Image (cartoon, rainbow, N blue to C red; front, side, top):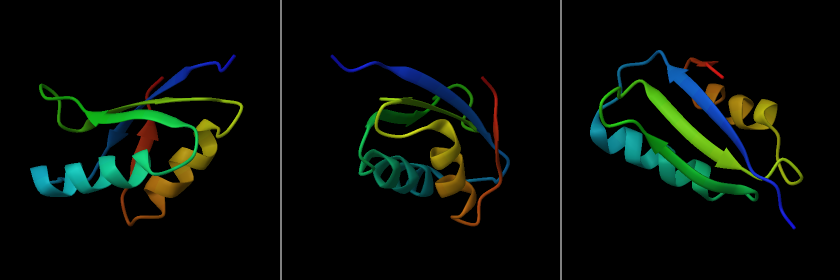
Length: 75
């Protein structure tokens, strides 16, 4: 039985809709990620659901920050 955990990130960069979709798609291809999407009402916030037995929040943050973006964990 898999577990689920959530991560909310604040992306400091100003991203257009296309770049946000590309980032969502990129993160979704990682093993253990079940959902990755930006908030419609707050486009700087990205919500990610993941299986902590396969990936952890530090790995996710490392990938996002390694994409020349500046993100901070909110939750």
